[in-house]
Image (cartoon, rainbow, N blue to C red; front, top):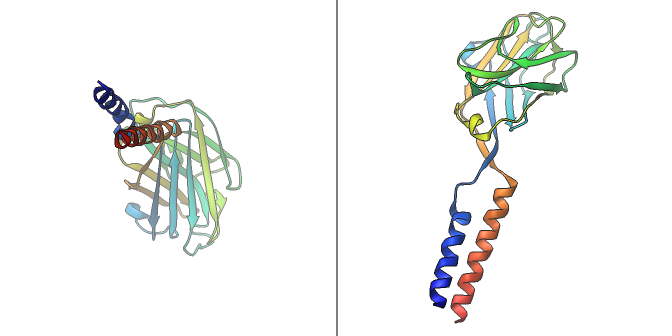
Length: 212
């Protein structure tokens, strides 16, 4: 009878120990020597993103030389990470870049943010003149944009697979629009607690078994 109870307890713990870990958000990094699939004209940079259920952040670290009059301004940025059939309610945004910015949805073009039919993008554009103006950037500088939105499910974030990253360099309109699959799901804290509890419980059962 005691052995049956131990086996039952062990089986009860297994789902918490080996079950699939829930995903809370995704992170990734893309390093480009130029404009990626869009061609030339962009400074070398590292693009990092962190996408969660209520906010997403894109961080650009400029590693290459910046040329005044060619690519020393960023007029717009975007992240694409949701299917186009879903809705996203943007509640606000912030940036470490200079100037006034508008935070919305849509894919990035040379003229700002527009609609898309392939994936749902968060988009930010330089309010004054996204076509030729923008925030001044320098080599070695790091700039971040964060979009806040109403809660969405983690499964929706991962349903697209790859994340599109975009940045529009001005005043010469050097456009970078690339795609990366470098995503790394982050477990939810609550799931980690269950995982730890399961391991501790299983260890206790095994210890009692050895003592008998």
